[in-house]
Figure 1 (tube, rainbow, N blue to C red):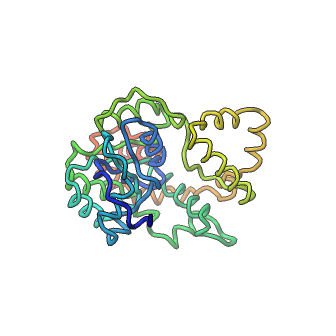
Figure 2: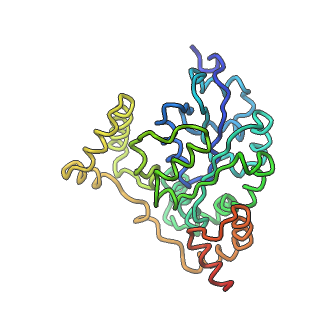
Figure 3: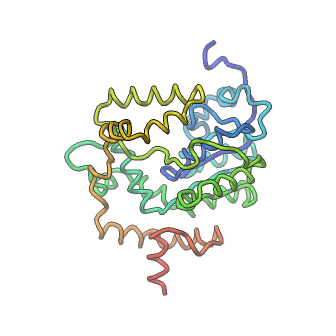
Length: 298
């Protein structure tokens, strides 16, 4: 059957809206492992931001067979900063539960840059963050968290929005997963191989062919419930050495931000950071950008 002719499925009840490079893939995978949740495949449908013209029928066919699920949803980081996506999502389902993931905004920008390099969107002799940002204003725009979060809060209300911080997830992933489950009204007593794993690390395979083979093996293993076996194999001495040798961390190829760039970005983000602290009613944001701001004000 042609994809576009599939019958409509369940109407989604939650959205993961980003931001980009802030652990949204981790959240997606954790929820995918929950027996009471159905998420889309692929993860990012970008319906409310990029493909709205395809209609609700196209959107809902990704949730076919999910009628018995307690929570049904998808995660598309392109929604967070897209004003039209807020309005469209609210018109479609004003009762959506909204999951927002954030991290230190300056570090997010650098990770965003590494992502663009990994995707091949930036090439040439100068792979520096500064060169990339000069060509892509979205680096900074996506890190204006308060500006974008206000729009989601205004549309859906604070009671329907949960903000998770990547740094909190790294510190206690199971506790943050439990918060997400409680927010969606599902049981937190389940297990997933992704609890303690980082998703979408900024690494590249030294050989694209090897990367394709590893990806195919991992995907096939997870599809038949053997993801844990693959994870165990990666930790053994021989496989671990081969795995590590096949990959390159892009942080080794791309220079860190220049110190003066960090200082300038933190200054430019100061007003938004103060607004975000008030929105979240949280003065202990676990971010170097926030600490630099509060130390300067003290």
